[in-house]
Image (cartoon, rainbow, N blue to C red; front, side):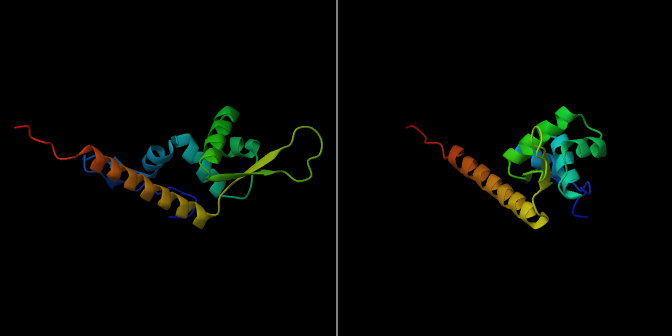
Length: 132
């Protein structure tokens, strides 16, 4: 698998259902398929503005902005003020975190998510006390 594409690989869950990367990122980060599409789009190249992403991904400006805000909040992408743009509103470029940093963050967050789920199971599944 290249660093900017999802292979479509799936894992089998105990329920019998299968899950892919989009499902896992959706569960742990609350990302939508569009959010993941924007993230992967940013991983394919350097820093880009919303207009470039709109054209490349064929998504609306509103969808791109919603996804970028979510990805920024999750600390998966960076926002960079475009240099040299002096007039009017500042223009921002967006860039995915470096591949190894992003992968490391996701793996760490998924492990943390799994540990918290295990703690919740331990907390909620206590032996029942039998009253005499």
